[in-house]
Amino acid sequence: MWAFTGGCHYDDGCGRYAAHCGRCPVLGSRHELDLSSLGWRRKNSAYRGVPLNVVTPSRWLANLARSSPLLGQFPVHVIPNAIDPDVYQPTGKEQARKQLRLPPERKIILFGALRATSEKRKGYHLLQPALKKLSFTIPGRDALAVIVGASQPDVPPDFGMESIFLGTLSDDVSLALAYSAADVFVAPSIQENLSNAVLESLACGTPVVAFDIGGMPDMVEHRGNGYLVRPFETADLTHGLEWVLQNDERRAALSARARQKVTDTFAAPKVAREHLALYEEAIESGKRQ
Figure 1 (tube, rainbow, N blue to C red):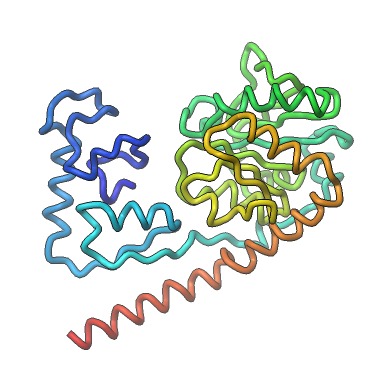
Figure 2 (figure 1 turned 45 degrees about the vertical axis):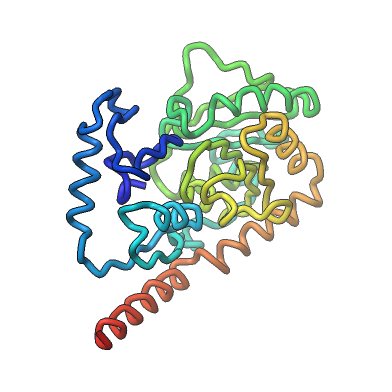
């Protein structure tokens, strides 16, 4: 959202960019003409008279851009972020779990993000009660929560099940192994554009359970390659995880569709062609003016 706000990348529902920012809650400011307002006004001045084409990775962000005073005057296009499906691809679960030293027989629920447990926007505070509810239907001895992007805390979290923290995985190979090792990836973000983690999980054939917000519906097909949860209902988050985990045949079909969705829509060559087509259209439009 940075391109049409006074400075924040996600506004956490503030909505003040629809005027001219100011009194910014991130800054703890009570002044109309604060740093956020100055940033908004500088962008307004910089954009004026420039023939921009705006590209956003998700329909959610496109709709926000179209309705914003700063970018609403320009054509807004949706072209997703790309992923290399040759890098993020399924590895056999047994092999992936062996390499990551994860138990072969458990149902693994993977949650991962930068600052996974400390960034409120990523929804860790909503994941915790959902997993505790899940432990009543899938016993803790059968389920395992695996967290990527955070270190093991001194006091283990009460998920109602065992948890393993893998820390930060900074290379594609390790990340692809983590996705492949999991039975389901959960993304309880409360505001999100087009999550790289969700794309990577789907590319590795791992179904995704996520709140029906932001760019999630662009990637997750409800009951097709995952489950879209009613925002921000932890009971439905639990139900979505149950729905994926409790039927092996269904999960295999979800896995196949997850991979197919990525290769059909988000593979790098296809996305590159969409960008190229937009450049060519803009050049032709410029010639006609």
